[in-house]
Length: 266
View 1: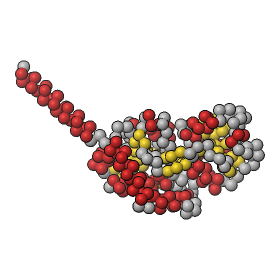
View 2: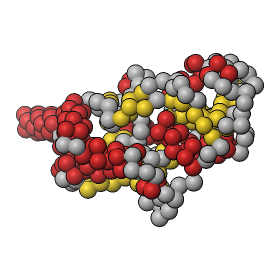
View 3: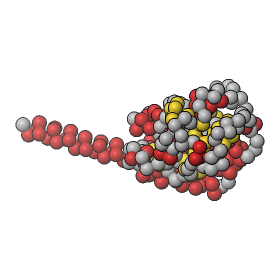
């Protein structure tokens, strides 16, 4: 009987020790550096942050940032593609280690995941057709007869519905589908992030952006809850990227050196 008791106690002690070891190894930072690879979740429909070029490769501002992140961790970069409204779910299920996909840091999202310090400032704008003379400013949007395109589970949808409660909304799964609907004249307005809007009007001169922004927002990296070590390291990484000038180099490539880098996108 005593021998059985000793055996049971030994198993319990080993289990507790193993549990502590797992907790110590819980940080994605340790996990990523030991494994030698980092899995980054993206939705490649957001020009110029992440999109597919003519060869089908995922490229963009966020991709270059992710490459620098992998380089700093001495890890292989693995980009995993998901639908936008699946990103947080797969992060929490640990199918990926981090989201770098033009995701705005919000209080609502922060209930489920943790955000780093911001790495990009942006905001929501309204895109319309130039020939639409009935819409001159945001006051003209808040009407039932105005059809506004938004993308599901984005801050654009949230802010537009809050600020323009009387408008009629058409919700799309992605920005490509929503912008095509605007171009085809199926909706009157598309409310989305300013960088994408800026690019869209360069490709479609029949479109314009209303001058006043609906909001000002910040993009941040997203990781799972309960990992302060990884979160603090990411904050240091962002600061270092800006201090060394590498951030400016990437920014200029995608936002200031013409649109050559964005070729092949419709």
